[in-house]
Structure formats: C-alpha cells, structure tokens
Amino acid sequence: MIDSKVKDISAVELKKYMSDMGEEAYLLVDVREPKEYGKGHIPGAVLLPLKEVEAGITSFDLDKDLVFYCRSGRRSRIAANLVADMGLPVKDIFNLAGGILSWQGRKLPDFPRVTLFPYTSDISSMLMRAFELEKGTQEFYSACVQVFQEEPFSQDASVLAGLEMEHARIIYNYLKEIEPELEDFEKMYSKASGDIMEGGLKVSEALSSLKDMEGIPCLNFGELALDIEFMAYDIYKNLAARAENADTARAMLALSDQEKGHARIVSRIISRCPLE
Image 1 (spheres, rainbow, N blue to C red):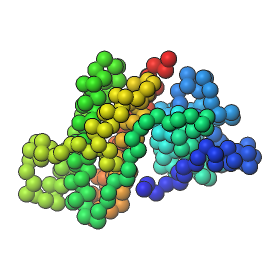
Image 2 (cartoon, rainbow, N blue to C red):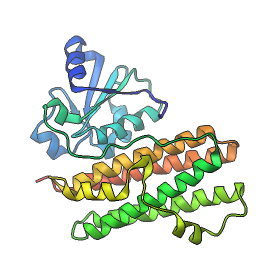
Image 3 (cartoon, one colour):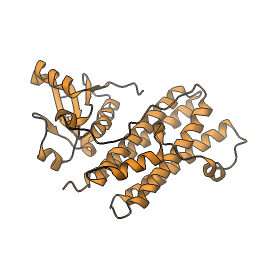
Image 4 (cartoon, one colour):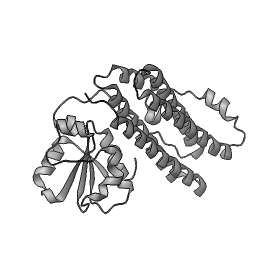
C-alpha cells in the first residue's frame, strides 16, 4: 500500500468521531460537484470539487484533521492522497469509505473491488507485469470508446487509452535496458495478454459491470476510472521504492506523477457529467 497519512473511516466511525470531537478539530470536505452537494450533503461539510482540491485546500485552516468524502469514496480517496502528497502541516487525513451513500445507509454501486498489485522482489518481473497491466487498461478504455460511443465521455476514454499506451512504451524502454535481447515494442505489445488491468481487475468484468450499472454512465465511468488510475499510481510508487538504481526510481516516480495527471483528467470528465 501507499505509505501516506490517509486512513479509511466508516460511516459509523465518522458519526462517532464527529460527536466526540469539537468542531475546531476537523474539516469535513465534500469533493463532489456543486449540483451533487446542493441536492444533499453531510451537515457542516465544505464543498471543494475534486478538480479544485490541490489548488483550493490551502485556503482553509489546515492545523486540524481533514475528512474527505464523495458519493462512493472513490473521488475522495484520490483527493485525500493528493493532499497527503502535498506535505501540508495537517494532522490526520481520513477518507469516508463508501462515501455519502454509506452515510445514508444506502447500497453501494456494484463496482468490482480492485485488489492490490501482486509485488515480487524482481524489478524486471514487476516492470513486465506493469507493461501487461498498462495494455489491459488501454484495452478497457478502448472498449469503452466503442460501447459508449454515443456518450460525450467516449472521446475522453480515447485520450486515456492513448496515454496508457505511452506508459507501456516508457516501461518497455526501461525493460530494454535491463534485458537488451527483448523483441521490439510493437511485437511485444501485440503479444501481451491485455485482459487484466491495474490491481488485477479483469477488463471483461469491468466492462460488463459498467454496462449494467444503474445511474449516470458518465459518473459510473469516471469513478471506476479513478479506481484504476489510483491503483496505477500505487504500483509506480512501490516500483520506485523497490528500484535497484536511482534512474529507474526517478522514472517510476515520474510515471506515478503522470498517473495523478490521469486522475486529474478523469476528475474533469466527472465535472462535466450531466447529473440530472
């Protein structure tokens, strides 16, 4: 797991926390969109949409705990980790697991839960696995373009698919340094299975689940994409920590930063989703 200050907190735990703590001890931050906030929010929560979190969080008094929430806990998990990476003088950072749906006691959307990346001690094997996962994620986004071609976000999915292929090429270049005998990128990429995404989530299962979800397709796609990009970020942070030389570590940290950039792209997709 990413070594950060972020802690998950359940709805039951948060309600007790809020009853036990003084109002000055914490800041409750809703990272959904204004229309969502206007339809209902946890009392006392300030609105700071995900796309504005990094720029806007410093406008608040940060000498306290921060509690982030959204609809399902996915956007807020990204927000909490972005803030944790900023190195601000906050105390604890919490993410409301299950989001406002769990607060209201409602059933969560049927998202496949993403598992952790199966790490090994061999950097070459880890890079190879990451290469395959990048192709899987590219395949998923490309499939979304076809399945949801009438939806405005299909163009965004196409952009994300291209970014995943760029990452696969970067990983290939580092693999080539370790194993010079590797075949060329196009051949290797075509042979990669591409059926599993970051975190071990099967492309076919994710696509099937996404098609069957109730609610707003754009919002469902955005929240699932955030899960995928967060896991990719986790992978590269850990690859950097396990790298055998400084150049590889810097490259993996650069990739992790780019995954955060992907998450920012997804947050903009969500901000454009029709919510009615």
